[in-house]
Image (cartoon, rainbow, N blue to C red; front, side, top):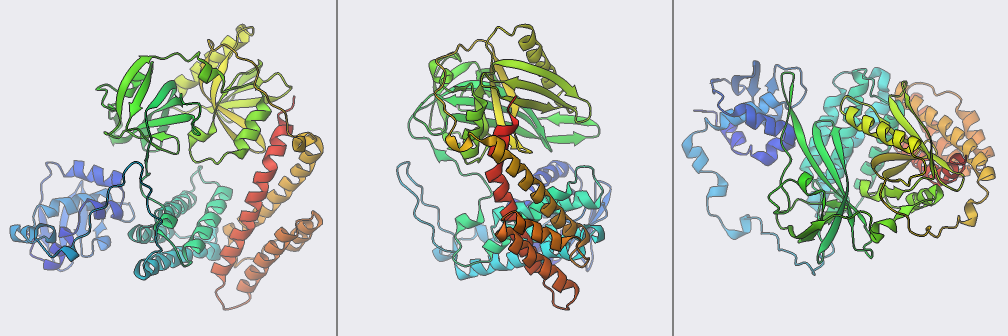
Length: 588
């Protein structure tokens, strides 16, 4: 039995919530698996408890964050989590019985139960955070800003291997302060920084600069007053009750392998034509576990009280009661029940009315939408003809070019990986069918997005049995009729923005302690283009960087925020210009 009282107190507080916060949920689940049936042979000393887990030497200390492991992982690894779980079994019985959660106490010391909200009851307006909570948020935001500005001071070329540890500590502080959005942002910057330090091919300098600026802007907002819980974000998606019966039609399935997760995404059409969100998705993704070279995945789950997996229901039109939806995503809630099923008929009027035949309409519609999930990017598109298809060996992408009947063409691409070979083969088969039988009518379910001033499509499903209704009524707005002239100016502005971002990347790469090149010419060039605000923002950032090099004052945080202002201007300007460029670039 463990004798160290301080360590006993720490172990008693090491519940699932705390251990997950120390690492992540995936490592915690793996630790639970490793701890099953494992022997607990430990020794105590002044530092804490020492034991061997998975061939690694672990020293568990109080606080648990200071525990050490002999493996190469930084921070709290799965060995440390497993060791903590094993040591909890060795707690004296009397200490476990004295846990506060088992002792009846005065009501004022217990957290009140949340009041359930009825379906027709709206949650009350959130109140500002208390001074204590606000101070914790401000403190965590300051720690994050120090880590972010540290990158700008030193530059990527001078970052030490231990730099990622600071971001992990900052992320833990964000978690403790319930700053969900901040934790995610900091962890992403830390992860990309690790890619850079380890010289991974996945590292993209420009994307890192973008995330650095976005994270800095977020921390600046969280450093203000009058914050509410909604300003901090949520760790888990909040699903809202769908009022009434939800009638859904299955329209497609896509296999996905992303990072440590694999499974399927299922696509549905809401048959209520008055609904604002017509497309819905359900993600059946499970973590991937590694045992040597073997890859293991849990089976698909049963949903909505059907007693079978969703994959077996994808030929049935279903009516759900108690459905829960969040940004177009369906929940697997046990409160959701299938009340009726019938054979799915995709060649129905409700679906045919959603089929687009003009690529310009898709581009304008996509640009006007607020994109919160993949469901907001989905379209049915009926091409006039197949212009061609090829596999690009350089980018490892299958590219299919489709055109409409109005003189516009767009590329539809899918990248080949070791997990998408079957999908690529299916797409090639679809393309060959279109080439061999051009007289037939085809409809594609696609996910649309903008990339490098072009409208791009990602294919999900193709149908050759959906008949056409009357053509959709669409007229190109007058403001986009002269795209030839507008696109030329937009292209020149795009080149200017590229040059401006190159200077920001140079600052991040070499640090503001190094001299930045060609800054005066770039400031003048922005002014010549009529971008006076951008010119002033860049001049302010370059002056602060110059002041940092010739002064003992640490203005790195100020420089970071000024760089974030430059990036934000460029980002908003690119968004305004992308539609004009996309309309011009899709012309045959």
